Image (cartoon, rainbow over all chains, first blue to last red; front, top):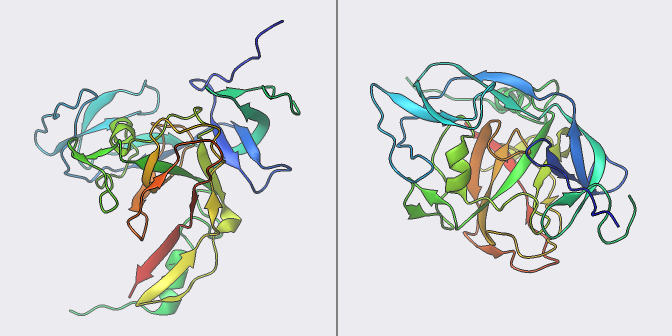
Length: 113
Length: 163
């Protein structure tokens, strides 16, 4: 018996919809993420993934997850425009089902698939 | 110089907020923020503290927000469709568009970070991507424990602009 196939969350986006779909549940998002140019303005202190303060010089701030790159911690100048991607224009596609440790393409509890 | 907004002006601005006609973001996503998160990397989030201001939903703010791990306990971000946002109405000294009450999926087990103190409104369903419009504690400064199966977290976001 083959193990049910899990959704690879590093490759797919899942959100919970209870409107705009036939049945409330979890759905993969279809379509391409859109991109927006934003201009960071915060002068807040930032920390790296180990909790160590990031040294800010000349008003530079730390950002992560820039388009065309891995989720990295880098720095850009405050006020410098950067491009981020978002999924607000994507639509629900294939329904998936929750399990104990993630989402599955077929209901692990034996419901609809 | 004094300045003032009219109700009609506020409504026109609010109609360009998510949920208005022709807005950039037709679907937003609610993320749960928990006591596992911190402010400034050290101070635990509480019913009166949420992550600091930022324009971009940066990777380390996810950590700072202590968001439950997506995919465990049936946690996922909740989609908020455009039509969920109501029309502007007077509230206090401004105009407010209130969203329909949003319900996250019922937990199938305790969320990895179970003590929820607020939520974020973001443009991505995926942790670590998109833009955060903002973070909010619950108005009553409460903590909601999603520490077992069958618990449904409900929140009611709103946009408000004051004169």
